[in-house]
Image 1: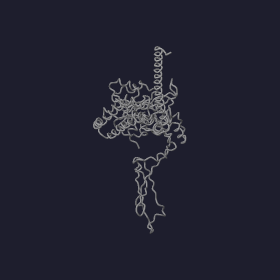
Image 2: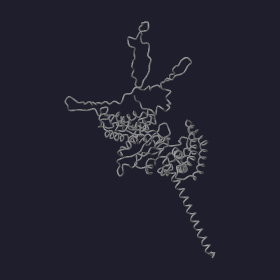
Image 3: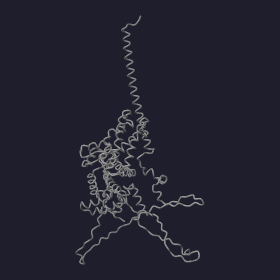
Image 4: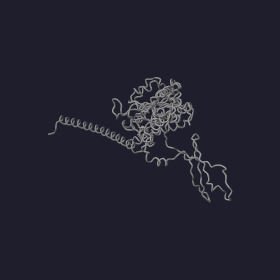
Length: 523
């Protein structure tokens, strides 16, 4: 008996439902498979990024002291030295009948260094010509060698004269010499040395303690830490003037990096804290200001920059968004950050994204190459050529990014690069508004690098006061350094003059010294 039409139709409907269900399941599995593949690709990118960070060579990377402890001499000797032509050397030159020596030229040693002359004479028995005629001095062959004596300590004895009359009814004593730590044993020279060794050259206090011990002097790291905190507090008026001058400038860059403070109320020792760096990239006399804060929130950004009016160059960190309510502040972006996203996608991302990242890197290469060509031009010429050459490149770059961002997984390295580029585009091109502006935040990042190298040596601050002292001295030393001021002589001068300073003009003068506005005379 043949099945009825109704049963056939019912069976058909059931099969249709089952087929649709299978199609739906297959589609779901395809979506899941695609998600799994994207997640797998993303995790592989993370692994490659971590491997490269730990083991591989990294662009925009400086070598830490830990890496150079044992092999610095070997590594540096293999690098090309732009000054090697100035060093004395001899090179064999083949000539037909003989080999002669080609002499190089020694770079002149600085004229302002102390000179100690040593007369080298022939022994008396050799002061005769071949025929026995006595020889006399007719001149000198002069050569110079650079000498160095390790740090020496000495005790300065202050004998304050006491005056009186024969009857003994009246007595007067010369006042103490002003000192930044009035009852301490450290002179300005010693304090400046400790500051510069720690914050300028990355030598932590425990190593300085050992160095002093080798000299036979008992100075503990705890004592030096107290010196640093007290000295930093005394420098606050100078720091405040530098901050005011920075906020009065037309162009400020800002960045931040993490640090760690062990003893803070209500916070665990392993909690990240932050060093914020504000700087003035443009002009002859630049400023670099470090600020310590436990947080990285928009409240900190507002505290540091709410009074600023002008161009502010920052990365895409969300805390800076709150500043845009200030209509007198013009935010511009950092192409170093934008480029870095594509660079990571090219080196550690999945293969499909690597090809796209290479295209983006070519765009950046064109922009940076042209920017370098403009470096020595006037502001007006720089601005004019940017509009003529770079604006079309940016337009092409944006059109390419808009056409390709949807073709890649959003959580992949290349997806993150596209997201940053497209969301920050108006800021990344902001430097085109003024010929004095830079393409990136490199000036602030280089200042942070100084801090990061030092941080690698001591890893953390013990207290908030210690972190604030670090911020103070990094501010003073980095500002002096970018203005080609001798950092030791500048800090020594500050420590000698701050106890005498009474007026705002006195502290303004000290700020001028740090900024290189007033030349620092020293022996």
